[in-house]
Amino acid sequence: MYYQKIFIVLLLLTTGFSGLVRSADDYCDILQKSLMFYKANRAGRLPDQDVPWRGNSALNDASPGSSKDSNGDGNLSKGYYDAGDGVKFGLPGAYSMAMLGWGYLEFSNNIASCGLSSLYLDTIKWGTDFIIASHVSDNEFAGQVGDGNLDHSFWGPPEMMTMARPTFMLNSTHGGTEVVMEAAAALAAASMAFQSSNPSYASTCLAHAKTLYNFGETVQTKYTLSIPNAASFYESYSGYQDELVWGSVWLYAATKDTTYLNKAKQYFTSNIAYGQVHSWDNVSPGCVLKLYQLTGDSTYKNYFEQSMNYWLPGGGIQYTPGGLAFYQQWGPARYATTMAFLAQVYAGAAKYTNFAQSQLSYVLGNNPKGQSFVVGYGPNHPKNPHHRAAHHSTTNDINNPINNVYLLTGALVGGPGADDSYADDRTDYIKNEVALDYNAGFVGLLAGYATGSSSTPTPTVSSTPSSTPSSTPSSTPSSTPSSTPSSTPSQTPAVTSTPSSTPSSTPSQTPAVTSTPSTEGSSTPTSKPIESSSDDHNSNTNSNSHSVGSNEVTSTTSSTTSSTTSSTSAPASTSSGASSTGNPSTPVDGSTQLTGATTGEGVNDHSTSEDSSASAKSMSSILIAVSLLLSVLLH
Image 1 (tube, rainbow, N blue to C red):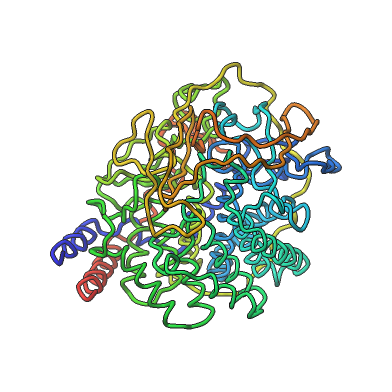
Image 2: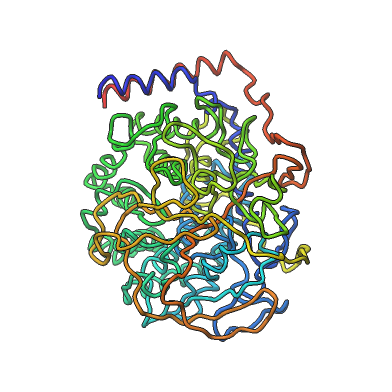
């Protein structure tokens, strides 16, 4: 094990950290790109044409009995699509907004120095506005909009969707603790992020956060029992105990009311203490870190370091030959960058910050193949991620056109195989998927290094935003494509667990286990999701899937071609089992950047001139590697 550590460090040294040692302004540029990904995934009536190839979509999404707005749009028309599909999944969506809020609170000074405060806060607000709209009454919350199976049987841009789009409601008889507590956490974080720039909105966020917290705590139910349609895509393998703590720590952070802190301690269990990975399903490491931040209690510090030590070379996690901490095959870059964000927030010791640096370096292209895993960044970046809107098929066919029509700039794709292998293949939703949660931790990690004035970026912590967010989205719509697909796509479904090798056309997933599941979940998965013709990045962190029960939830079905809303019941199970969240990539031919510029194959938004001082970079690489070597040997 000792020599294995040395080997990994030397490998990092020989690769030179060329993806890491860049100017501060480069990090600002990547951060801006990573935020623009969210604009590319917006639903509803768009207030601008910052992403010119996106138009209005899902305008009829609504909760039961709600009224249309002045434009005739449904109250749930906005928000974000989950990945490369058209579903608004409540759990990963709220998780992503909470993580974006956390990143802003930690590094708002850096974000401001890049001139990105307005964009960052607008990104959060587009999501939190949707969360607030979803909270239609004290104990009623829209946990999902869109049927995953119906949605994933269609391959085309969201502007062309015509399928029924049911809204699945959580209420006092059909609860969903994970989703509701995650929503409460997101709004609590937003209340702090907007406190100085938009105090009225901050107050609205906090009021909803408190009510949602009460709902989630009072009606403790695993959310997929109430929304079984979500089970094939975002099953809650870890249960809801971690979300009870997560909601509590964020409410305490926002209110300083010790009642919430006491609740966090009350719900804290050994499963949470020893969580190995932070993700949309399991927020245990984040809970521990927040508790340490808020209390200074060394118990939580020790728990967190134990989790982080697992991610260091020789700590237990597998590393690819090129240096990526490889948690599992489904979206490894997402896990590595999210844990790197937590390590960066914690700082603590050089070994943790070195880990954060090394993982960011890898995904930006400092790996054996020089492969960037961020669309539009670096000379060798993904161009064909699994994303319907960017691919823009008008024939309902994932293979037509051959290359994506538009460039999904700033999107972090799933990542390489355990051997560093990677192919820019749209149909490979395991390595080439993109999603809200993929970018959420990555954005925070970038924000820690992005500063407009220092060539040696250092994370800065700020609890209060330093600039004013831009105004609430206006109602001015961008143009909407008028054509509709003529056939049904034949998509390879995304799976919900961790494949062990290059995916076959029909992978069988086994979620990676990070900790013993909490008591409300079953201990062992009872079935594997059936795969449909689409893509899903539901690679969960725990393996206690729960069989679908017979509970029904109130839902409303809307069609993109009709303004009529009718009440329906939630399906008791998923028929096709499509576990995908399609995220196509950018075109090899005719790529269009988010700024609207059309380019040819091999689009590179970031010229190689970014590495202007080779000798300085080499010296910095040596210093970083030596530091990492020492920290590992002393570990």
